[in-house]
Amino acid sequence: MLKAGRFDGQARFWPSRAGGVGLAVACAAVLAAAAPDAGGARPAQPRRPAPAAVAAKLTAYPTPYYIIHTDLDKDSIREAVVRMTCMAREYQKRTAGFGRQVRTRLPFYLFSRAEDYYAAGGMPGSAGVYMGNKLMARADKKMGENVWRVIQHEGFHQYVHQVLSHRVPVWVNEGMAEYFGEGIWTGDSFVTGAVPPWRLKQLKGAIKGGRMLPFLEMLEMSYDQWQTNFASRNYLQAWAMVHFLAHADDGKYQEALNGFLNDIARGGVSWKTSFLRRFGRDVDGFQKRFSEWWTSQPDNPTADLYAEAAVRTLMSFFGRAFGQGQRFADIDEFFKAAREDSLKEDPKLFLPKDLLAQTMKRAPGYGRWELLNPKGIPRIQLTTPAGTVLTGSFNVRPGASVTVNVETKKGAPRAEKVTGGGEAPGGG
Image 1 (cartoon, one colour):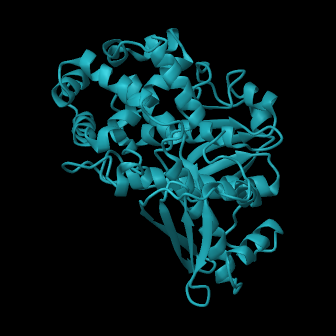
Image 2 (image 1 turned 30 degrees about the horizontal axis):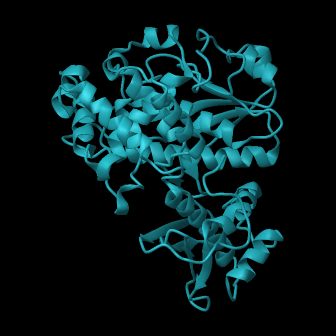
Image 3 (image 1 turned 180 degrees about the vertical axis):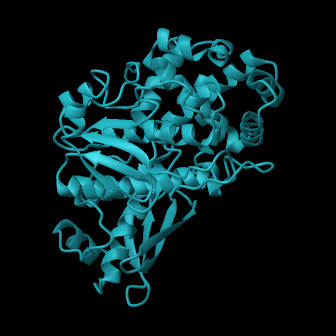
């Protein structure tokens, strides 16, 4: 069952990591889902229970953290169980020490047919929604990453609604959910803090075109105003504000953000008073720095995070194969087995093959790969064109768990070109 401790003193919502780019997702406990939400697509319809005829088509699957009601095929269900379990553990880790305890499995309805999703209350055109009493999503014929981004966003709302009942600024609520929605699942963990190049392009265009709301207007926006004056730009700006406060200027604002979120968790002080005290009363000047920082970012500012996610994903599959007795002489032999679908699988540690296939498709574009210590406990090392060296290691308990760690060291850019093709990291 889910468990989360109670608030006890100061907490660090944004613990630093080497380089300042891989910050952990903020503690979710300060974000109460005070209103239904449609995952950045459209406003949600009023809450209503799933009709009996629709619910009767679904089978319930109890998992450690959720009861998944679905009519998907076997492999899709297995993937949903693994991903939702990993997702809940991430939420739980970030909410340790805050709010109420979550002692029940949370309801998640996952429909294979859009018409059933709509009949159960889903807003036409949306891929998922948190209805206040359940999480729902539609998978259609195949679960794609776009659907999972929505589930991560909406699942974030669902979880924190169980942890804390405080009403918090809507820009924080939606900005944090968007931030976590961009988390990259690697099989055994999530990598957070990534900036998708397409999203950065949209943001730069909005800033340069003068389409960003004044910060003071955004800070004071109510939930009713957010829903009434719905705009995808508001989600973009809320995400950008949260990311800026967590990552900008080598983490300059992290302590202030930690204090702000702690103030909200405690209650007793208005969020506006706390924000002005923590970040200063010159809101216009603060927005100017926000705009300058974002527009100065390179096209793919978190390329190293996408590379880290790739290393973690490959190590998750490598660790499972290693636990089943499979060995590789070098990285080419491992890659060949991965491409030919001949990696040994641990039946109790399922991972979807599409996750490996997509990572292998992009792997050449990340840089030069090597297998270290193949005759002992192997490690996979990636050297990016920017000179960053990422070394992945693993610990496997066959039938129980695979734990992956990645050490990152910055270096000088390499002169040689990356060979082997593959998609640009972080594109799409």
